[in-house]
Every structure is written in C-alpha cells, then in structure tokens.
Length: 288
Image 1 (cartoon, rainbow, N blue to C red):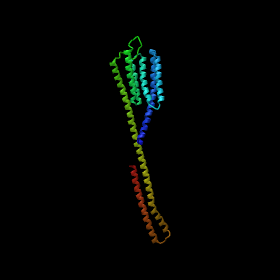
Image 2 (cartoon, rainbow, N blue to C red):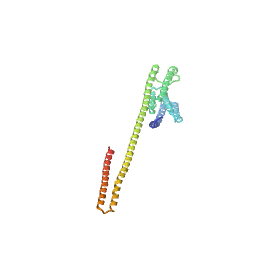
Image 3 (cartoon, one colour):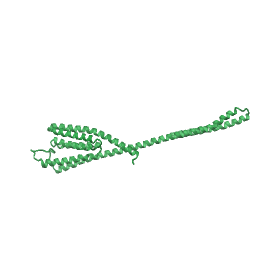
Image 4 (tube, rainbow, N blue to C red):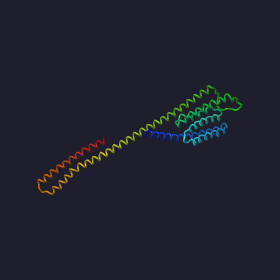
C-alpha cells in the first residue's frame, strides 16, 4: 500500500511529465511545419512537387490523426518517430540521392529527447536501417541501368562496407540520444523526489512548531488559572478580616486581626514573587 507521501510524489511527477509533454508537443508543431516547408522549398530545385506536397501532407495527416485518436496514450509519439524518418527519405528522394539529407534524421533524433523517452529512438533507428538497406540494394543490384528507372538513394557508390559504417555511426547517434532521454527522465524523477522529501520535512516542521505553540499556550493558560486560584484564597481572607475588624473597637482584637491580615498579605507577596520568577524563566525559555 502506498503512503500519502509517495502518492503526492507520484501525482507531482505525473503533473510535471504532463506539462513537459504539452510543451514538447508545442515544439514538435513548429518542427513539423519547418520540415513540411523544407520539402516545399526542395520541390523548386528538382520539380518534385508531388513528393514535397504529397508525402509531406500525408506525414502531417498521419501525425495529427494519431495524436487525436490516441490522445489518451503516448503511442502518437512513436508515430512521430516514424514520420520524422519518412521526412528524411522524402528529402533524399527530392534531392536525387543527396546523402547529406541524412542529417535531418539526426536532428529529428535529437529533438525527440524532449519527450524523455529513450524508446522513441527505436522506430527511428529501425526505419533508417531498413531504408538504408532496402534503397542501397535496389540502387546497386536492381535499378542499375542509368537510362532506366532510378532509385534516388545515394549519389555515391554504396557498398556493404559503407552501409555497415553508416549504420554503426547512426546507431551511435541514436544510442546517445536515447541515453540522454533516459538520463533526463531519471534526473527529473530524482529531483521531484527530493522536492517531495523537502516538502514533507517542511510540513513536519510546521506541524511541530504549531504543536509546540499550542502546548505552550495551554500550559500558560493552566499557569494563569492555578495562579488565580492561589491568590484568591489569601486575598479573600484579607478582605474578610478587614470587614470583621470594622465591627470591633477593642484594640487587642484589632491587633490580632491586623496580625492575620499581615500574615495573609505576606502569603500574597510570596505568591507574587513566585509568579514573577516563573514568568521570567518562561520568557527566557521561549526566546531560546
């Protein structure tokens, strides 16, 4: 059974991650617009409007449809990972095999770190490997006639050795980005756990101070009540003796009453001195 503290921590973590996801989605909206417009710009150079508009539009439709249908799930983020890899393939085709367009997928891999989910690198990696392997095979072994249909994958010779080198380098990039996604999430959880612990300690401290203040107030009230009771008895005795002494004219009787009045007055004096001493000690104690 989870404690109240752990539940609060989980709620705070969920709230934090939800906020981060919303901000990440906002950033991705801008990224997708830029990627789509880049495809339009590339269409000017090689007259690939059907690819720039067609594939780019399908990518946007696929992402926002998945986000709307899977709005209660994070699966749309995996769809996004695939779409970013498709944009890379689109650019390479539009640029007639310009190999440098592969860097767009490395940028996409880095952007995915904002979701703090290392698993988003998996579909991106798989699609890049399949794209490299499939297109390299078609270009080098199927569509080899330069006068016939072309597979625009690479403008340079792409043998097995080159393929393996590129796959390894790409895998390193994806692995590092996945690691940073994992690290940021772990760091966020540790940071939130620390904040939660500090919050609990602060609550305990405030509760302790409140209890101490309440206890001091109750103790003070008890002290006042007891003091009033202690003063009441000798004070009543003095008042009674004064009333009685008014009814007598005998000096000896009056002197005896005065002695009793003096005795009770001394009791009051002792009580007052005792109260003053205790009050001073209490003030010093509160200051400490």
